[in-house]
Amino acid sequence: MVVAGGMAFVSGTVAADHTGRIHATGDAAGQASYVYEEIRHALAQAGASLRDVVRVRVYLTNIAASKPWGWCTMKFLQMCGRLTAR
Image (cartoon, rainbow, N blue to C red; front, side, top):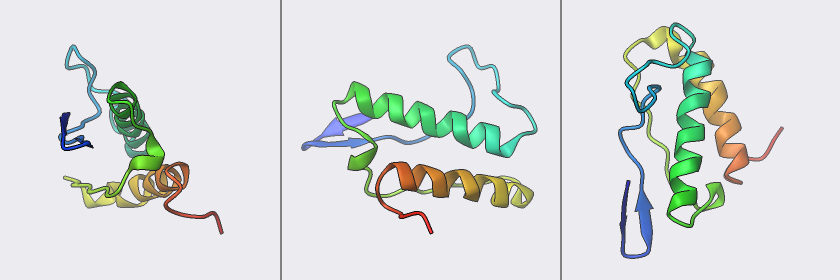
């Protein structure tokens, strides 16, 4: 994470812990949830919250993961206040 000019930039977040152990192997939704929780934690360290999120960009290496990852992204954006429930 980089904090500059009153903004926090979080990038390169993957579903691996500090030891390199992959979280929720084979479970795209579980990995997405882990990644978004890591982002929430990083923002908190910078004094920010999910409500401060401006943009989310995701790169997937397996297109089959797009539906479960998309579902978790929608939930994340709802927590950020950027998407309302329908």
